[in-house]
Image 1: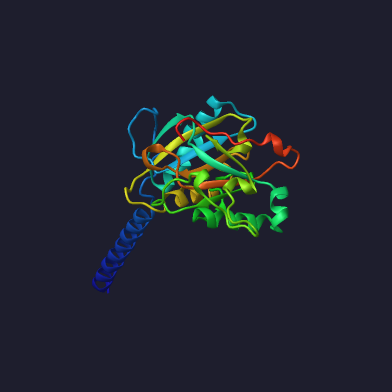
Image 2: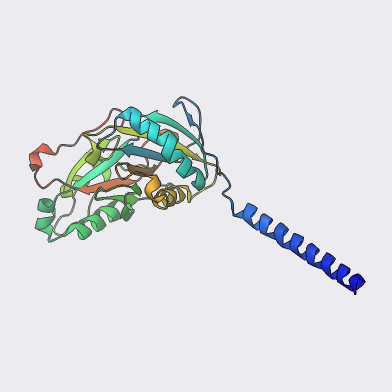
Length: 259
């Protein structure tokens, strides 16, 4: 009887060993490709970024924001496949439009109709500004193959108007960070994916931030965006509602040198 049990015991041990090996292989495959947080390289280091991240807080200084990038955000974004990061930088040039309800009224348009008209004019699709923030703003996302938007060359299709520039529905402003954060310290870092041909990198970065839970403190507000050719302004256009308490005459069109 003892001789009969011995082969059975050997088969049982072999089966347990196989099960442990399969479990270990499965866990290994489930681990993120790049789980190690990238170091924050100096801005002058040559990297090939495709996404920028702009960070702000109503209570933190620029140096504290930079510390938050290193200690909080880069470990979180490592799960998205960030190969390298550089910064802090001064920001990324963005074209912002401020929709004004008073400008929409003559055309019997609401906010949604105004956004649709702007998106059609620049060949974009409307979506909330990517990131992790509380501001009410939208991104008019355009194919990367399109040229940058030149406001003076874009015409809107509005009822009763043969020609209307982008400014017909509000004011325009070039900025280095969202206009809603103009009075707060901001820090911008550039992110490079671990894959050269990666069209989902921005979406993965946003998903990593949203699933991080309380790891990202509530006071940190984050904007994500695409980096254009040679770090110029990307083809995306950003839109927000004009401050209803601000007089229309105070909203002026501002441009940056070289834009």
